[in-house]
Length: 551
Figure 1 (cartoon, one colour):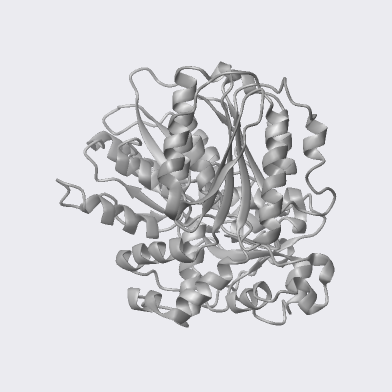
Figure 2 (cartoon, rainbow, N blue to C red):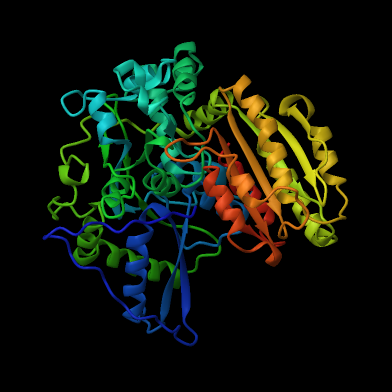
């Protein structure tokens, strides 16, 4: 997953940034691909550049370079299993993804041994509930230890923050990533399940079948604004949009620390280490035992691991807010109260469940997650004719197939006119007809983008008022600029709340192809509290799948 990285305020004891010049590949050199969790992107980019600058060689004299690929841990796992990512090293944010990767690998024909050994941790960071400091204080922090139970109380109270005398804060809005795409989301849901079962270890499928555990999970998830595939997305948008967007989000301690260098919200975030228990994000470095990894690549990967574990790299990790994997390196600033962290925490650690339990939990999550109400706004103008339309339809169908049975979806087609909205259709009851309809979309006409968005927004507004217990969103795809609307872009922007109020209807936009570039769609997505993506014929299916992670 992509992640916005914040610079960390430098303390006196922090090591300076590593500054390196670009490296030209050595002729005939081989490379190793390191797929790593994007939570450590800033650190890994520096270390890869520094390592390559040293012109590494094997004892045999063979030269090599490291190519890094920052991704969501779940996304990387899926790409490795599909054969789309021939990684030499897999370094997710948590060992749980090694467990899931090996479990899935061993179920595939011809695989008798695990793909990913446990490996060594390169950095660590606890999973925390990042919350605005005044809100944490309103809940009793720092004198009172807080946890998931405190979140549940205020999420479940119809009065929201008014329950503690702060009605101006509105309802409690929670964010965590989708557990099938991102480590922080997966660890969050596991921690919620442990809290619901009132256990700290040995979470089992039997625990997940218990009504009290499911009710706890369902009630916590009611506070979700939307999901997503990037922990960094939530961190970045929290700091940009402020507390009207999210009251709290499940992040890493390192993310909270990094926020102090780039906080635009006017108040600080602090780390809450849930009293019921939490996990270390342990960032294992697994050299894959895969048919595409040869002996030289393995040796090169071992050399790069030694570089990451060396004291200079570990000191730099600490400066960026990670706890070093090197136990001889003392923990100090910026892991301190001045950066919203507590080096004495976490006090209670949770035991990682078995692969069977995690897979069962993901099934339970699909049943109890906050349901969605989504309108797919689809440009069918004449410029889409041919392969662009075919790929866009495939992408739209892939998006619809990711939705869960309790979700509902509508289809809004437009060209130079806006067609009647089809739906909403409950996915578990009528998705096949909608998939067929998308597959039969013809191309023709011009582009009335603004009118289509306004039509869908007004339709969704009625449903959002009638059914506020869903994630309400518009997903807009167009390949060109508006030329036929009766409304202007400003008219569209005026639909969304302004100032400190956050829209309850999120808008996700896709600029498809060269003709749709510009700042119109990013502005609409920002006003609608969603995100913007750039797509083309090669990646439009993946773009739609990425957006599906928000639901």
